[in-house]
Image 1 (tube, rainbow, N blue to C red):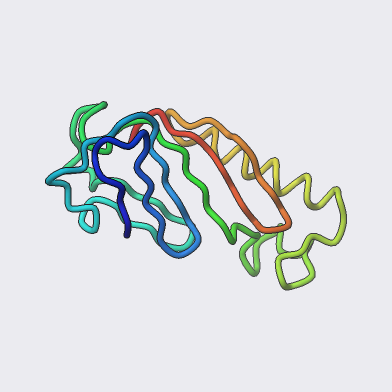
Image 2 (cartoon, helix red, strand yellow):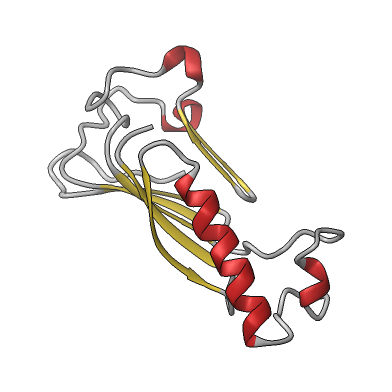
Length: 130
């Protein structure tokens, strides 16, 4: 995990093929990014529920999350619409899965959908806070 020091206009944490970029200036002095931020395939978690600071403190603030490799899981109803490698077989299949990603974003409290690129499986959304 990498972080930029205080004084820059953003903090970026990237691991694997996912990324979190916080908006505005963020004071990361004294923060253990490895303990606070968990990034795994399909999952980004900032703070465990029992350690979440007040909104606006630490990393509990607005951020843009970009996740790559987001394709239908094998065995899901959407997997039948792909060629086995995550490529959609037709535009209608792509549209259906992109709509599913949009609905998933809407179920995340304080999140707003930005984009889903089906070619790379790249899902981008903004959160007000964590």
